[in-house]
Amino acid sequence: EVQLLESGGGLVQPGGSLRLSCAASGFTFSIYDMSWVRQAPGKGLEWVSAISGGGGTTYYADSVKGRFTISRDNSKNTLYLQMNSLRAEDTALYYCTKVTIHLGGLPYFDYWGQGTLVTVSS
Amino acid sequence: SYELTQPPSVSVSPGQTARVTCSGDALPKQYAYWYQQKPGQAPVLVIYKDSERPSGIPERFSGSSSGTTVTLTISGVQAEDEADYYCQSADSNGTYYVVFGGGTKLTVL
Image (cartoon, rainbow over all chains, first blue to last red; front, side, top):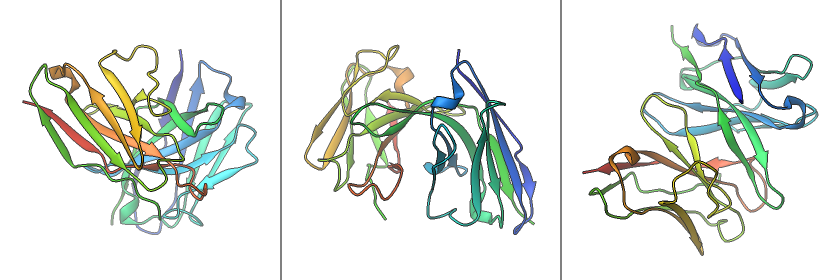
């Protein structure tokens, strides 16, 4: 059974930093892209960042480029999101997702964690 | 930036057919994916590659594509189908990994 367990969320002041983690199990972690998707309170889904299975290729939404860094440790089956220079608009529930890409298709998110809440406020 | 446009809300009576649309310029060239999100829960994939249904998703969920619009159809809507629905795709140039639509709240009257 695929399980994704996020941690590391909390309250942080504007301009501060936070590191999210996602412990994965139930699948061969190292061969799948992984991604973070966030959802601000009462708002829709926003894709944030993704990383290839080997960790060599990363992708970022314009809204977080230059401030957030995605990484992974395949020996620990763990995904990370380092968030710096946080802003009030980064307040959201952050979901860790497993990515699947069918031949000729686009990346999509077939498994989701329950999310970890990040609140940026003074 | 690339945008996918969904109606904010759709209402339907139980047993009727609900249709949720998603529009985007690149949809003739890119597949669409649909997620269902119930309150307090993580999203669940209900349709992939425009019209394919993952295992475990009821047959009443179907997807279709026509030009710049894709449609999620729920036939014989049940009260448990009340949820937010999001489409997901990408722009034609691959500028963005993926993009989500703004979401549609389906209300079962």
